Length: 541
Ligand code: FRU
Image (cartoon, rainbow, N blue to C red):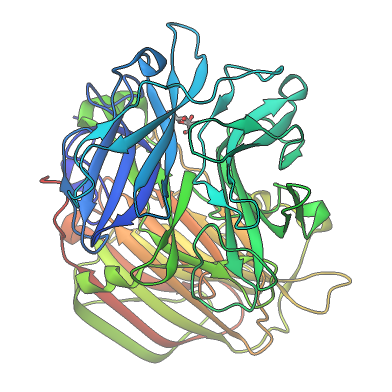
């Protein structure tokens, strides 16, 4: 194989082999977390899609169960695509998913499935009632772009359920989230006007949920509404392969959603500025939090995927809540991941001079959790921000990568680095002075261009701006490193970047970790702790 088996991730969700994509119907039921996902039982490329099923007590250790949903009725015989779970008021979970009902053309309908035995906490068997499909494309809807039903929410005033289905209109130009309503979860009628739409192309995997307005970390059940909440609408843009969201107001009477920032409509904020797609949240009643799952594809060639026999992982589940500013979400790895922390090393009050780097020694860092607080000595030397790049973090990072010396930064981590530094993945910040802005502009970037000597890889730089006040010089970074994935959280989860990398040298015990500073101002590491990560139970692999 061209891919070293030691690059297989250990604590990120994965089945033992084959292709995976979207997270489906995550839920908590009778003490167990359930996770379903798009799966090809026959190989490491997309196809033959069924719903695989795993369960966990802690979202970290996973046990694989038998396939939950596979083609078996006329309305799903050519594929069981993405969908969501809703917990009914009597505690019964239902799954709604997209079925492909004819060959060759991806004609899409929506189906429903119920657990055969509600007293089985593992929900091993799912039954599809005879009245499937329950929603079909009608009234001018594009039948080949009509999929991925959300979790339903219920309005107490009229007792009716609502859910969204992703679609596209205006000849492919406008992404659309259609609302369907039902009293009995069986007969569904479309609301004429969509909940929302924007000029972005097809909306896959919509997600729509309430968040606490006052920035408390507590999550809300999907049906909660009222004065104390704002709503989040997320869509996966198939043209760009990114998950965009807005924060806004849900008008229940008009059945419409209005983003707070009209200019930001589906284009500005992303859950993750890296490799993270088709995500979905669920409310966890056990710990009163909302948890986000997202799929990270490989960025190696399809031939390499086939050779290694697997493709795709899930990001570490993240708790999501509204930033106190109300303008964006915050995300943080679920606290359970900390149970995997083993041996650790701490570095304190270490000044990194311009051009210097410092190795973090004394532990294995191919699989590590690293938390670091930086303090920049002075912001006076920050580079001016090129106005042509001011709105485009990704291009800015492409032009000013980790190797380009700056004023304040680039500073950050080199992860999965080789001893001779030929290979290294940089996760860093860079601070700019922007004309007409009093606050310095902070860029967070992952630069994998030197991550591997293997020439055939897709190695895009990923970047996002960090809406933080760095005037006191302080900023934090956390990176979860797991052999071929680096998942980073800037400024307490304001900006997140997941990147897949495939080192050829920095594998196993040869992977090293450094702090670097390639700017002109001193950077102090106030505190850095790196933990070696243990291996959880992972679906029997
Ligand atoms: C997103 C997606 C969904 C679809 C599923 C099929 O990655 O294209 O829209 O339901 O994958 O596997």
